[in-house]
Every structure is written in C-alpha cells, then in structure tokens.
Image (cartoon, rainbow over all chains, first blue to last red; front, side):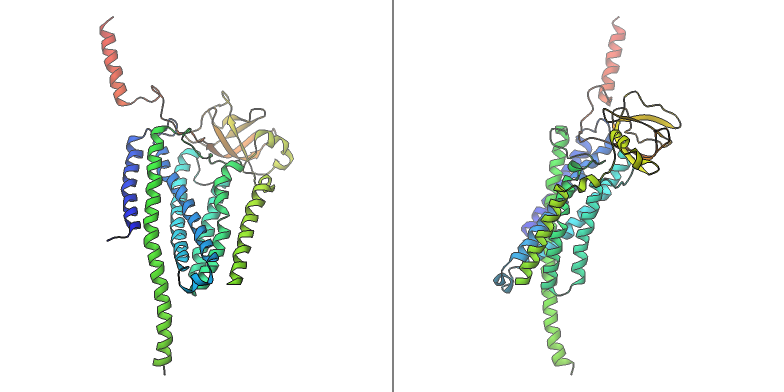
Length: 237
Length: 151
C-alpha cells in the first residue's frame, strides 16, 4: 500500500497533464503575446509553490527550534528537521525551474533574458540563501547541530519570501504586478488553477518521499556511529 | 536547549527586523530600478555621463522607424526623446511601457543601448475579428460567395 502522500503526488502528475493540455491546447492565446504567454501556466504555479515550500520550511524550522526537551528526547522533534530538509530541497528545485521558465518568457516579451529589476533580484537572493541552507546541511554531520543551525538560517532566509512577493508592489520594476482573476481571461484562469494544485500535489508527493529518505539517512548515520564505536572498541585492538 | 531558544528568538528578531527595516525604512528610495522622465530631469546632474535606466510609456504617435529608431517616453507630465539602434522586441508598440538603459546625450535626448518592454498583468484572448482563425476565415469565404452571387 503506497503512502498517502505518494497517492497525492500521482494525482498531481495526472492533474498536471490535464492542466497543461488545457493551457496549451484549449485556452486562448494572449492578444499581444500570442502563444508565448502559455509559459504562464507552468511559470506562475511554479512561483506560488516555491513560496509555499519555503513557507513550510519556515514552519518546520520553528517547529524544531520550539520543540521541548521531551519531544527531542523521545525523537518526536526529528519530523520537523526531516520536513525542513525535504521542503527546502523541493523549493530550491522549483525555484531553479522558476528562473529558467521566467528567462524563457522574458526574452521574447521583455527583450532580455535577465535584468536586475527588484523582482528578479529578490528571487535570485532568495534562491541562493536557501541553497546556502542546503549547503550548510551538507557541511554539518552531527544531526542535532545540523537541525538547529539550518533552522536558524532558514528563519533568516525566509525574510526574502515576503520581499519577493511585495517587490513588484513596493518598487518600480520591469516585472508586472500579480495578476488576479479580474485581469486574466476566465478561460486562462482554469488551467492556471489546475496547474497550481498539480504542482502543489506533486510537491506533497515528493515531500513524503524526501522526509522518509531524510529519516532513513539520519537513522543510518546514528546507527552507523553506534556500531562504529563498538567496532573500534572491540575490533581495532 | 536554553541556548537554542536564545538562538531561535535572536533569529526571529533579526528576520522581523530585516523585513521591517526594508518595508518601513527608506531603503526603497535607494533601490531604484528606473527613473521616470520627471525623475530623470530632476536628477539631471547625477545622470550626466552615467548609465541609467529610464522607464515610462511610449508616447502615441512618437515612434519614428529607421536607424536609429526614435520615440518618446512619457510619464504623463514629462517626456524624454529616446533613440536606439537596437531592434525592439515584438511587443514594442505605442502606449506600452518600456525601460531603456543608456546615457543622456548633451541635447537631453536618451541614447538607449538596451530596450526592454514592460507588459502589464492583463492576459486576454484576442477580441473577435482581431486575429482571424480558420473557421472564421472559411465563414467569410462563404459570405463573400453569397454576397458576390446576390447583387
């Protein structure tokens, strides 16, 4: 029996097929941009879910840092660290997709792949800071220290998330402000919504698998260090 | 465990402080991606000799095709004449937002080295008759055939 999150993930893949079909073949092309505008159906859901993933990372970081001594001792607090590892990684991958999709959309419409406007700059900083969280995790082997340090850095990195969202409202930018159903043709809103849930569900599916992997890795690490110490005390002599 | 709480509270304070500083402080004034024509005129001394960005709308009727391509960028009150030897993106047209990167010439006109088109957050299907689709074309053929036959 597969995990519930895996079923949600598979549902996400199916939804994504439906959403992309609707976006690419059913929805009308934009009056000015033509078919290029269809990148929106993958770009915008990707953007939303990047921010969702990092927000779950924030919750996980707080969960770990605020968990009591008893939750730590009983091992119940580890679920927060596993979740942080999973969502940060998925968020970074979605963020990379986001930038590439954005560049492909920007070249034919804006005329450039990249420019240091407030939205693009804040996204780049956000992405790099969450990459830094993953890099930090790679450098620290001791699980408790790794969990605490990466949780603290996640809190600081999260500052970028509201900045990314409000960058187009606060500062003059090349990137347009957020669309709403009133600025988007109803026939375009449907595939956008479908794909938003599709990417969310796929992310949940990956979160389930990735948290499980993180748990097994930590257990193996702790198990290994235990057996190593017994082996060295007994066998090395 | 205690030191960890201090860590956590410290990080939260830093994070919230950072957002508040950026949101409420005047960092935004120093973080300028482009100047409007009015702002460019106000900052004429600073803009002289430097690479700057100018943003605004392409004034209706101001586009003169050729080499260089010239047009006027307006913010409703002030207007700056822009010339560029670059090929504009397909979205370039009258009344659309643009951001141009370049320098201000001695005569006050803007020499653009990079022309970027800014689009709004509206996504609409083409209106009827704006972009012909196949069925509509066949429809007009039928109409043409019947109208040609009747008179």
